Each structure stands twice: as structure tokens, then as C-alpha cells.
View: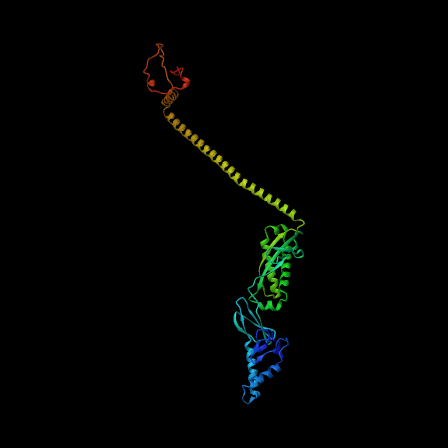
Length: 380
């Protein structure tokens, strides 16, 4: 009978046998032999028990109808189910998808008419490509060379281990349930194919150094587009590169080349720093010299201009009174020449030295050390 095939045991009359004490409303079921209950036997024993409650000791048609209706009511009550916050309910009737239900107490036709699948849509699941982790999940247990070795655009080989973290798409859980038979295998194949495509478009040096983040992002995008095209109902949250390095046979040579390139970059940076310090100093010194030359030029031009203007003024006065101007120029010149000298005046007629009041000796001036032997100064 159909009710004898219910999953979870017992069908509408409860659990079958066992130590749980599962008894039907009309008596205990079959005990421990593992065979499904016989519906006719159950009905016959139920009729015997109902005779005690039916007047006249005969069940009749009315009692049978009540029994059938009770069985149907109990069966319909088994259609209630609960959806947890991290789940969605995929409702099916006769194996065909009908709707998706959210969290809470829900109802669908019970088995065998209806069925509910409740996948966890918040769990983050991880697919490992290129390696297998230890049983404790800490570190890599071993490399899978056939998955990790990939060819680059410059015809080098790179060893890449990475993870793809995914979850069921809450908006399309029915696609995941009905379209994916082996989710982990499908996602691993898509991840490996996407990584080989991305690595095949880049040179190995960029992959080992500066473009790892862009590689992971591009792989995630390609995987999501491919899985959406398959109708997989999966979201790729992140692609994490665990190890990116050359093959073990040539790894040390690559490390040496990388170290040499880093040294070259360091020397260039040091040279750039030295140039950035010396060049501004040289430019500043050149600017200071130019400014000093310009200042000297301005000063010389100003002095020459002033001298020329003074000469023109003197010449104009000289033109007005030549004799007086010549005498004044002579006197001013003699004053500049003899003003600081000590003088002795001799009479032109040979009468001897004319005494004069030595006013200059009244002024106590320090004598130069070189004139200590001749304190009287020059003689005319």
C-alpha cells in the first residue's frame, strides 16, 4: 500500500515498532521483524477495537467512513514543516517544483504527493584547487600537481594553490537543488578552468608580484558568469590565492632573479633620492650666483649712472664759471690729498721755517706702528 512506503517510519499511523514505543492510535504496530505493516490487518484489528464503541457491536459503513477520514486527517497534518532562518523550503508536488518558502512554520502536501527540501543557503563552503588540506584544516597536506601547474602567456609554468568560497544563491535555491548533481566537483572544474584562462593571459613575473589580487578577482568573475550560465544557483563569494610560486625544480633560480631585480630597483631608488637631493642644491646655488651677479650689475650700473650724472652737473657749473670752478676743483682736490697728512710750511723766500700753531698735535690720534720712527709724518 502507498502508506507503507513513507520515509521516517510508520506512515500516518505513527512509527513502526522499535524501542521508541511508537504505537498507532488503534494499537501497536508490527514488532521488530522489519516488514511493512499490512493495511488489511491493521484495519481488521482497528474494527475489532471500534466494536466496543459502536452500538450493537457492528462497525458498519458509518464507522468505516469515520476511520478513513481520521486517517486522512492525520496524514494531512504531517504536511506541516518548519524552515529555519538559515534555510529555504523547496516545495514539490509529484516531483515538480512549485514554490520557495521562507523561514517559519509552513505547509505542503505530505509524502507521497508532496515533498520539501530545505537547503542551507547561508553556509560558506570551500573548494580547494591545487592542494588538499590536512584533516584538521590547518595548512596544506599535499600538492595536487595536475591541478596546480599552469602555463603563462610568456610560456613559463607557475604553481598555484587557491580556494573558491561559495554558497547557495538565496534567490535561486531551486537551481542548485535541481541542476547540480555534484556541486563540489562542478565548482572545482569551473574554478580550475577559469584560473587557467586568466593565467594564460599574463606573464609569470606579474603573476608572482603585482597582479595576484587582480587575478583572484578576475577568476571569481569568470566563475560566476559560467555558473550563472549553467543555472547552478551558486554564488562565488571570494577566490583566495594560497600559494603562487614557480615549480620546485626552478624555484631557486626564480628567487635569485627576483632578488636581483629588487636590488636593481633599490639602487635606482637610492640614485633617485640622491639626485632629488643634489639637483635642488645645485639649482639653488646657481640661482644664488645669478642673483648675486644681477645685484652686482644693478649696483655697478647705478654707480656709473650716478657718477655720470654728477659729472654732467659739475660740467654744467664749470661752463657757467670756468675760472671759479677750476679753482674750487683744485682746492677740493688738495683738501682730499693733504687733509690727512702732517705738514711743514717753508717760506718761499728762504727765510726759514715759518712757525705755526700745531693744532693737529692737539688732537690725540693713535700713531700707526709703521710711523713710530718718524712721528712728524711726511715733509714738503
